[in-house]
Image 1 (tube, rainbow, N blue to C red):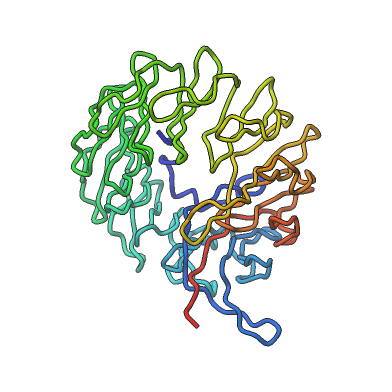
Image 2 (cartoon, rainbow, N blue to C red; image 1 turned 60 degrees about the vertical axis):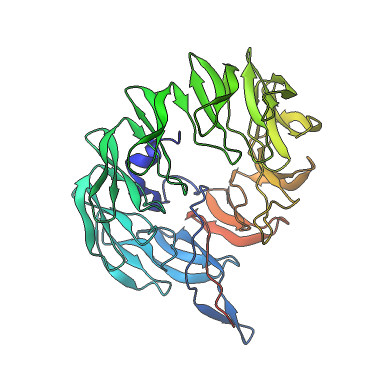
Amino acid sequence: MKSLLRLLLPAFACIFLAAGCSTQADDETAFKGNSDTKNGKKTQITAVAPVMEDGRCGYVDENGSIVIEPQFENCGSFSSNGLAPACKNGKYGYIDITGSFVIQPQFDTASVFSNGFAAVAKDGLFGVIDETGSFTVQPAYQGIQDFAACGLAVVLKDTLYGYIDSSGSLAVKIQYETADPFTEEGLALVAKDGTYGIIDTTGGYVIPKKYEYLEMFAPNGLAMAKKNGKYGFINKKNQVVIDFQFDGAFSFAPNGLAAVETDGTWGFIDTSGQIVIQPQYDLVYSFKGNRTIVKADGLFGIIDENGNTICKPSFVYLSSFSYETDENGENGKDGTAVFRADNGKWGFLGQDGKVAIEPVYDYAGSFEDGFPALVQKDGLCGAVCRDGSLAVEMKYQNIGAFTRCQEENP
């Protein structure tokens, strides 16, 4: 179950200027980018990120060039319709890639558009607007999540959650203590009366409300569940595939391995429930590609999916690996992880366990979707390429995640 803090006030996700550099990647988005002329040639801007300079927010591209001059009090990521939330004179509206307001500032806060709709707030309550800025759902909720592909969004009212459609009609009664957005399959995790289940878009249970904890189905069709204090795995027919026997568990990763805890130590099982990497670690992450992070004696290291040690635990902190993806969306072989050295500085580690970028930063975010990674040093923010060169100069008070632009046909 995802953190419900994200569901409470989702519109604030567009306000990336909290404290320090933003390193949280937004959903992959796209827009029709404008063109720039460099060296006499017309080039297509491929991605932009919001930045803060001298107390004003604007946008830079992947090369660090200013696309929209800093002029807003705050701003968020562009979405697929080419609009981004921006704040002027204390109110939020939506700008296009030229920096012009398409929807005039009038909201207390505003989220990025998703599937043609955006959550906005007025007088402390959230509603939904369409791309013209007209309300399709009048402000009446304490929180509204993005609309899923099925056309339903999570809403929060009087401490309980339900689902509405884009016209504001209640699709699933407000009744849940927690609720996740619907998946592409039209399924959602919910909790009521302290127990978890999975519903369809009608609100009917496809997995009954009977588990102490539950996660959504992994790509292999198995879901991690907790019953009588133990963790196991069920299938989409609610049949127990792996018995409830573990003290802790994570969902299955795409490589078919799931982390499990037994007697205070963690290892990995396969889809038959057989132990393939013996429990021996204080903590593990789920596999990303064929590598994962493990913790032993207070330090982090790397193992492969056969349990071989790639890098013995020697780091104060290691993030999960991020990968470049090919045209089919498959992970490449150039995974990197963010690490923190014992001097408190942050750098990047290759999947071979060797330092790829020396730890010289005060903070660093992961490489996401092939974009530069966001970094901070001496109180200023920028972005670094995988080879260690700077993509965005270290001169900004803050920087948000890059979002992709649509390539225009030549």
